[in-house]
Image 1: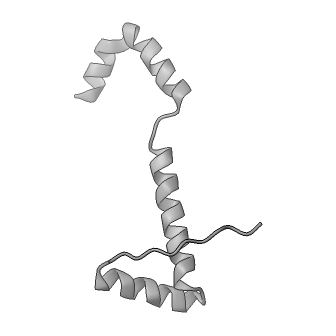
Image 2 (image 1 turned 45 degrees about the horizontal axis):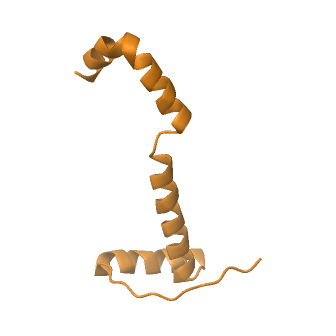
Length: 75
């Protein structure tokens, strides 16, 4: 299944762009392929940074009994 691609322009530091171009050449890949991968990794990292709903529900349910312990652990 083909994905629609959209062109955009941005600016990055010369050092980063040079390093990414070198990496693309070393891996025999196109620059856009590495940028796609980097953006997908960034999105995944941010999505995984959020606690799952059931984990937060369990924490909040336990907070009534263990609030003093949680406070001590945070210190």
